[in-house]
Image (cartoon, rainbow, N blue to C red; front, side):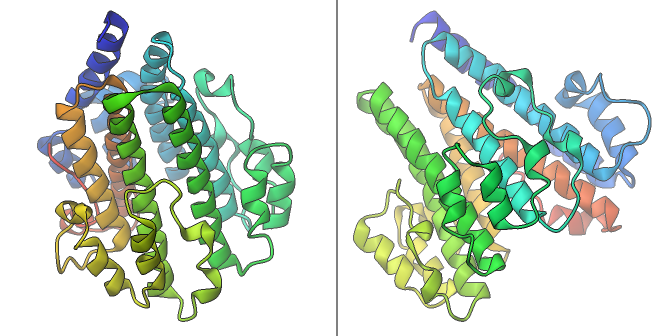
Length: 345
């Protein structure tokens, strides 16, 4: 690796070293108000360096969550700047991912008014922004949402589900958008990298893409009695470690348990535990954290380190968000602890 590549790898590992400790989680779980939780984060963790600009007054829960998202985006942006310096362009993956998550957020809130400042993003993202949450939050239907996406690469994905049942249509939209994300990322990797380095990066995207597909198919089978009409290409991973035959087996499953049996007989089995009764989303997150933690610690590929840190950091922010939710509903520390995924600290 050259000096710039070393700098990227070192930056990713330095950020990872500032992760929340078991003691931090214990202290946060003991907090009984959002203000108390954020005061702890500000005074005792690496989140404090990003929180100096937060007002001293009480913030609403959505604004606390927005502040966390801003911290996450700023951490990732700090890595993307290094990646850009070494002449790579995978930083665009994070631009697209953030835009997709903005579209999904708006699609989940078509019947409600959202808060404009939830869509504030760091300057690094703004420079290549093509969709705007401030506009999309006005949409009250999938067709209106699609209209706001005219001229963007996401328009086609929304058009495909405009006339579907809203519940299944939302799941289809999410999967179609994530398929676009991983397909374009894989194309960029194949174009810009060679040899083992390329395969390591592709393997990362295959993993996330397969987890998205598995979760989508699992939820379809678990929540809908008649899924045949919805098992379209929107639920098939275009970037996958599974063979076409294995993907077809997953599609042909008639129950969620059957899907997990296939996963537990695949190379992904090491990331899952048999007879685990937790929600599928929690199990998928744990698998992603296990994968990213191992590769971040041992990979010599700076791009892999950057990508894996982003996955780890996203999970950490989700954990804090779950603690915020637990406090809102007066859950006990033990109850909140059951819904967070700590990974290896």
